[in-house]
Image 1 (cartoon, one colour):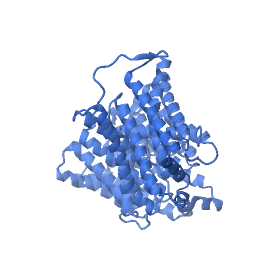
Image 2 (spheres, rainbow over the protein chains, first blue to last red):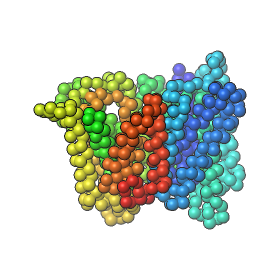
Image 3 (cartoon, rainbow over the protein chains, first blue to last red):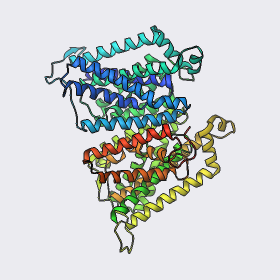
Image 4 (cartoon, one colour):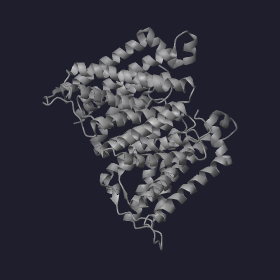
Amino acid sequence: MLRQLFMNGIITGSIYALVAASFALIYQTTRFFHFAHGGIYTAGAYFAYMLSVPFGLPKAAAVAIAVIAGAGMGVFCDYAVYRPLRKRRASAMALLLASLGVLVVLQNTISMFFGDDLKTMRSRHVAEGISILGANITMVQLGILGATSVAFFALWLVLYRTSLGLQVRAVANDAELARIAGTSPDKTITWVFAIGSALAAGAAILISFDTDLTPNMGFQALLMGMIAAIVGGIGSLWGTVLGAFFLGLVRQLAVWKLPGQWQDAIVFLVLITFLLFRPNGFLGGGRRPRSF
Amino acid sequence: MEYALHIVVLAGIFSALSISLDLLVGHSGLLSLAQAAFFGIGAYASAIITTQAGQPPIAAMLVGMAVSASISLLVSLPSLRLRDDYFVLATFAFQMIAFSIFNNWTGLTKGSLGISGIPSLALPGNRGPASLGITMASVLMALFVWSLSRRISRDAFGRVLHGIREDEVFVKSLGKNTMYFKVVIFAFSSALAALAGSLYAHYITYVDPTSFTVMDSLLIISMVIIGGAGSTYGPIAGATCLVVIPEVLRFVGLPGAIAANVRQILYGLLLVLTVVMRPAGMVGTRPLQ
């Protein structure tokens, strides 16, 4: 039982990790909470659902198109809403408010077109899982773990082994200095939104192969991603991963001892505890949150 | 007549809510995503205390406000000493938790069934429409909350809040304990939201968790920003507008399921457009920074 919960925690943790890392990536370069990320997450899952179930496209094609569409939405959101605000040197609060507006529009558009009932793109037949370390794990869940690992490795490669990654880290460190050094922060931020939104859409699609879709799935995922990023240390890529697995495990272990509906309350307690005793998270260190 | 009064009641309740949030957003530069949660705490306190303990509405209202202010400390004390972003996150988390408690603590809140049979506020000796009493109560409450907020914002206390909004470090350098001011105004704002919630419960005579979701928090934020944050009449103008718009849409005759979504999309678009194109809001004078 405990081993099974542990395994479940790892799987939900891997999804939170993608959301947390993509959220933290955008936060570090733009310095505001991009709430619309939750809307893009939901949109990614529904795109994949729409293309693969009613339109009957092969799953691989549907997933690829949905991830690209998610990235496009993130870039459009930055271009149409955030960039004018940045040009005006608007505060982080103004950007946050605008992103809340975008979130409301996205979520309700999805709910209007697809309805509020559960949608599913899981395969019909339930495959017998395989047993690892005494815990049962289905092939789909194994696939989720594999895909998130690949996504993380790709993100790490981009951030630490390419010149784009260098620019992203430079903007995260100090946008003004990055501009003086001859890079274009706006262009870098466009890339950040593309990569971050693709990761969020990807995470949503992955989880949709295992659980059902609802229009407000993004809120939950966003909240967990944000808390995971804070718990792990928002300035550190591996910190967000650590925070996400920690959160996934805490939620599963809470089920072990308490009725299921208190999962969320436990997560809130985790957040408050960290804000009180370790506001920079596991790997945040220092007095000021680090940048990537 | 009943219909017109219904709109006036809602406008009053939402005006009071918007003004309470504006004390944070407009005057102190803090953003709370949990205003609907505190609204709900007030509503549930009234519902539970009047139906289960049989106490009069006034007592229930006061208890609700006290509970709401106390719970606000749970959110503000850990998060407000950090960057403002962390406060937003803590309120967001609290909003999600509050909804799950309203929805799941069936022993106290009856879960998704909701609590019905809450006594409505009747006007003694009233021979006009039944809702005349609650209409007057609602308008009076909005006026009361408005004059309180006006009083605070012109007071020495309000000047410190405005200072925190503009430059917190500078206010600290003047020897003010900014943490204290932020915690107090958040507790105060939460108590006022609970007051509005209590009136709402006595008006609708039924509460269920769906009225207190994160979407409702976003609606209240939209009201403040669209009307004009930190301005004298902004929150009232925003609340009234966003209460009236759906009533106008009703005459367009959209199917029920879609109408709710169209309304929300409209609010969201208005919020984005206001922030990007008209940061001062409809009637505001001070553009959002």
